Amino acid sequence: MREPLTEQISDRLRDGARLAALGILAAIHVGLALPALLSRLSAYPRPWLQLAAFGLLSLVLVVLSAGAVRGRRGGQGGGPRRAAHLWPAAGLGCVVLASAAATSDLPGAYFLGTLHWSFLEAGWFGVVLLMDRPLALTWAFLGGHLAITFAQLLLNGLPPRQEAAGMAVSALAVCGFQVAMAVGARLLRDCARSASTALREQERLHTEAAVAEHLHHDQRDRYQALNATVLPLLAGLADGSLDPRDDEVRRRCALEAAKLRRLFAENDYAADPLVHELRAGIDVAERNGVGVQLAVRGAPAELPRGLRRALIEPVLAALAAADRTARATVVRGGGRVRVGVVIDEPAARIPATATDQVRVRTVSDEGRLWVEAVCATVPAGRPAGDDEGAGGPAAHSSSRETSPS
Image (cartoon, rainbow, N blue to C red; front, side):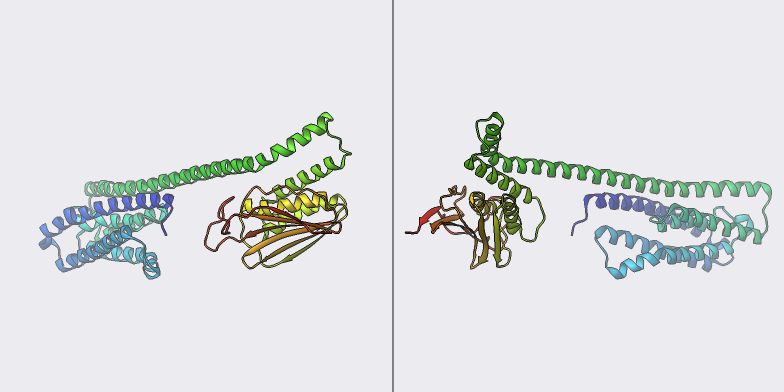
């Protein structure tokens, strides 16, 4: 899986700082330490010890370079990751051992001079190895290495004051460059972290804006269908042109209230959205004094929001017209979803559906009206959009059937 952009920024800045420090270390190791060692090799009491120390540091440098190349090429498995946690301690141990061994072979007068090649680069190894660790660890290593060197100097005898001053200046110059590199790497990581935080915040704001815009358009589209029915009804009630005591007006109010409740229920999380939205409309009917029984059969089917709306609204219209009792059913199976209701008002008018993916049938007989809305379930693997993606081969027209008395 691709890393987020913020992690890529941090990783690239960190890798760039590590490669820069590694390049400085390689230049000092090959361009300064090696010529200094070879040019005065015969001046050392034990040349083999100097060569062994240089070889050990060269091995550490090779491992560091290989790790940097492998890190830029891709991820690592669990084994290499565990080794990466142990490697800095092992590498620092090798560096301290090589530096102490090379320094032990020097007379006191040669400390921090041309022959003391190991002091020039030991600190740089610490900077590279501890680049991903807290800055205090780098300072602790540099201070510890300087203390070990000073202890070895004391064992060899203190040099004259003039030579000691020159040694102090040399140590300050070498350690100053190393501290500056460590601090620069830390500042670069902090900048990368700040940039990543700012980018995440920007992405969050963009996401929130996109979600808000989507919700705004979605709500506008959903409420737009109610403007043609709710607003005239409210306006008529407000100006007195509609009488709230009229049965037809009360039925219209009940229907629009049920539609609004179903619309609000669309935003709820429910395991069975179809039944949840239908219950919202049933609740309005029950508040108006209608006793409603609901039976559900079959597992929930994935239906787009618009298709659920087309299935439920004919039933809501029937419930709004019911007088005392109603029986609602939801049946799912055989690749179809059926939502039906039987009410005690046979003359109720059921509006036609706004989609050709739902077939509505009405049957009136013996003082009752049966309304059923049927649609095909969404085929597996097809995304369920708002008003698209519903299965069903051909268009079905609404029909009204009246049984002979």
